[in-house]
Image 1: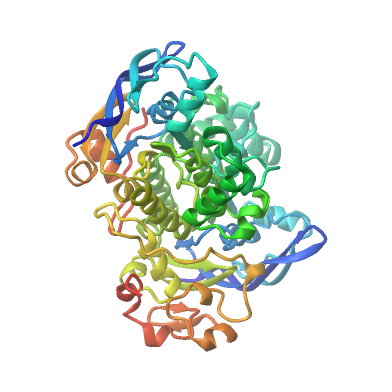
Image 2 (image 1 turned 30 degrees about the vertical axis):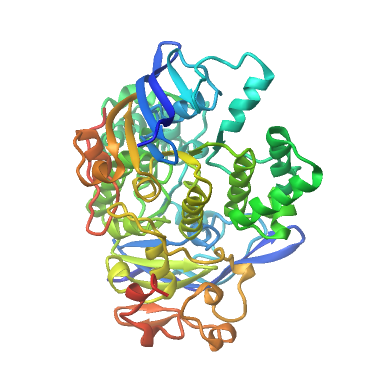
Length: 263
Length: 330
């Protein structure tokens, strides 16, 4: 296996007297795909914020693309370089796009900021990206309010890819989509990974989505990693009680819901 | 099983801007006493509007045609005291409990308001009944919870409070609109088990709305699948996977990623789900359907009985038994 493109070591984030992320470590191989699985309050979204520099870690370190990004960037150039290396796609495409900006403009903005180029070069790249995510010309130039949730999420993904990131953080990026659209986006994310070699961090509570899109996974519970390993092994043969509970809670044919005692 | 709820050719138009837009175009569905019926489909298919029509909670200016009968009485024309009396016989639980509870009133106020104001039950007695109900929904220490406010409760606990409040008036029908979608999967299992148990104990009928076919299958007797404002298939909940009667159901099952295996590619359905107002003159699913023929584009299929269920597909008989096997290979 090649050198990891992203390594988190002993990552810890404390808010007041609450430890949201507690000594979390993982490595993402170049071109790999790693899931961070957990329920609400597990700390998985805080990890995403730490990776993208939206929160500062209380302790621990993050190495991405060979550089340390544990501390805030000390210059605009450094901040921009970090932005170009790691991009994020959020869960809700209804709140993550500027309502006054067409998809083409918002993709172009990221392109111009991170990769520059002439107007014609950028326009060509925007068209390429639209093709990659399956948007037609009308959709590309429409305002978000005229697009469906799935189309908006395609814009958000194209926008993130415009920076040519080495790592894409997908924070529940397919959770709000209808099943038929979710399948389209999952297939597309698989194709993009094959075509560009980008690495994924998928933050998700949906184990079936995790199985489909990732090679490795860590399971988080109350800020800590309770289990880590290849996704298939974790789902087929969970070693920890909590992982087993998660897996057994997923509805499937023949499944019956179970009552637990309220804490 | 006698019919408690009977929807017959229900059509609903909502006012959007200056014009009327159909959201339901001919929904026909029965729910028997004590029966649990699942209603599944993608966003915009009309699931919530069906439940809201039954609860008479449609937005202002909605036009309703067709009939909704509850225990033999036509619901669409009820007014005043009759409407209030009817609403006491049904209860609704929504997806997001936080959006349906007043954040500045305590849980105790929320649970006892209706008993105190409408039934004149003294506060102490109302609180005693509320505490009892909290215990039933698996929240011990009810006396303390009554003094708490919604923000002090987790989503799972608050949804239990909503279920308790739904049970207060001892309804005959529970309309549950994605009651566990906003909850964690382990909490979902727990809350679903609770709903299922309470429903059976009390002989409560339930219309359970979800986008999750597996979840519907686990707690419902029958499941109806909606697409573009119509029911396209209806049959025993557990048969949807093994013997789907409509290509849409089969495609929906096939499109979902599998927790037990990684697919090289998922069997995505091309295009996007349509709403009722966008539906073409023929079959609403025709342009996404791998089995569509010329006549599907022009002829609107009716919901026809087939096997132990019904399907709104012109080719239902001929495709029977092949749908779940072939849809992913087409």
